[in-house]
Image (tube, rainbow, N blue to C red; front, side, top):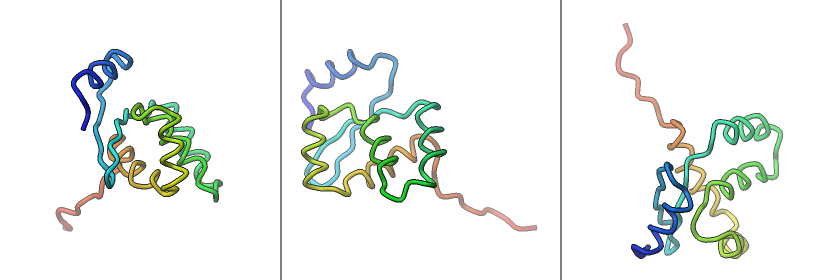
Length: 104
């Protein structure tokens, strides 16, 4: 997991930002919530993007740990890793399954 020193450094680098620790397999990531601008760009470009690059870009922008070079290496080995991380990012912005409570 993350050392207290690593957590302190990440909080110092991202003040006033909630950081979310996520584990996928054996890898640990720290994510931040995307800004409204980042999310709006993702939503507007994602429908036309058949390659998945828009989703990968959003995830890359939200991963604050590990650093970019390490994350790129992980993505080259586990090229679908952006999907479970993207699911977490979606929940951070409110994408959740709705539950129907009543019909009347």
